[in-house]
Amino acid sequence: MEPYSDQHISDATRRFLARPRRMLIGGEWCEAVDGGTLEVIDPATGAAFTRVPAGGAEDIDRAVAAARRAFESGDWPKMRPVDRERLLLRFADLIEANAQELAEIEALDNGKPVVMARLVDVALVVDFLRYMAGWATKIEGATMDVSVPLMRDRELFGFTRREPVGVVGAIIPWNFPLLMAAWKVAPALASGCTMVLKPAEETPLTALRFAELAKEAGYPAGVFNVVTGHGHTAGAALAGHKGIEKVAFTGSTEIGKLVGKAALDNMTRVSLELGGKSPVIVLDDADPAAAAAGAAQAIFFNQGQVCTAGSRLFVHKSRFDEVVEGLAGIAAGMKLGPGIDPATQVGPLVSAVQQQRVLGYIRSGYEEGARAAAGGEPARVGAGGGYFVQPTVLVDTRDDMKVVREEIFGPVVVAMPYEDLDEVARRANDTPYGLAASIWSNDLSRVHRLIPRIKAGTVWVNCHNILDNAMPFGGYKQSGIGREMGRAVLDLYTESKSVIMAL
Ligand code: ADP
Image 1: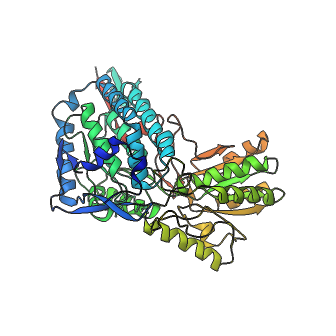
Image 2 (image 1 turned 30 degrees about the horizontal axis):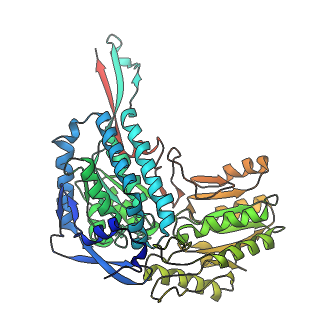
């Protein structure tokens, strides 16, 4: 059970892979109650290289009980905000100190290029933990002068407090395993919640390394628990658990709806960050070469397995041929390889299922009359067996085709010409999703007029896929409910309590 090629694997990663992999529940390393395990597959070869516990409903019960105990008793509820800040800073330092190992584990597990895992995923995680550590001491309520008609003769005083929401269940996807874990863990721990994290079955490894580092940072037993396992077992048990106060989910819109309904049955607070079909809109004044490079980054970053991927490219008809030619040239020149190889620009997709899903979409595009200006095929890399798909640019599409309407979640963009702003605003919004969009132009007034017309949680101008800790992130329409990051995320992890005192 060896991963693709071990020449690029550091000793630290080797040591991690050599340790038994167990779940962290109540501060203890545990197997699944029923002893079940699941294989971890190297997407660059298709070979299994290790196993993790396949936790189920009973394991989720144990983890929720541990998180409940830690929330209500022991050291954690006694910690001052400044103590939570320091703990989170220490956790961030440990992640930074182990950045290369985490990036390598992510590359082996997910297939993503290790250089990106280090410079994007792990770097963002460290910054986000530090950013949220700062919020631990800045969670505040307000005081109110109240005027109650029936109590004119009494002096009244009103104030609000923000309290940690309680035990959080976090269910995360496989495209940015460590970063999505951090997006849930950091605000939960900054706010004083305790939590159970369920990573995706395809990519459980960095969550387990994350758990080791959380323990090393000094989090009391039960504050942070990780249960690895399948979505329909462990995930469903967590989403519908009566013992938690909040579910934080990132994943597909289809599963997000199930999770949301399960949560609502218990009136569990829920935030959902779901799918997208984000438009990239190139106006006629844009530099075609810059727009082509931007469009390539928008769709091919992380093999297109990004909820904000710029998967619908709208180019003004006067620039269409130039931009598509530039984009197709970039796509054809990208270096495919295993994620663990530092020279790789495009890695494999995460799984055989995902590769087949993406190839199925490309086939459906051909059947409906689309043509590939670049790519359009699986790719063979090394000895074969990996889940590679060529970076693909589809043209000659119609707006009712599946490849235009549905989220592909792979390195496939549909490029479409348009004539005027009204038309492109209408077509850009003609989707059930509303996560993000980008506009490429230096014409300030047209850009400003377009921004309010685009129904999306994030609009980028002359860039795409750029996230900042201070900027709220989330979706309009079927792309989700709630905003993560920035000050806004605190609302998801705290309850507001109103206090009125008669003096
Ligand atoms: P994708 O389609 O991209 O694989 P999913 O939405 O299926 O994404 O998965 C995101 C997360 O949701 C994963 O951790 C997965 O295990 C989990 N999951 C899948 N099915 C369910 C379910 N029925 N209930 C709760 N979680 C689930």
